Image (spheres, rainbow, N blue to C red):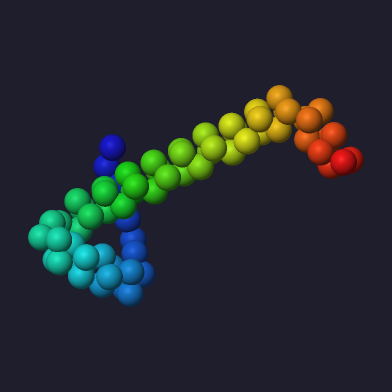
Length: 68
């Protein structure tokens, strides 16, 4: 899917510097950044879901520990 991204000048300059240092295009640098971000967010969501499940599964035990 095609998309236009408008960046503030300072962020564009930083992206340009990163891309130049890595010998890739700004497009490639943006793709990598978005991939890393979405991977991290996906992992965070899975961890939070797991914590909720554990909290529900062990609610009685957690309550007993609070009361101890």
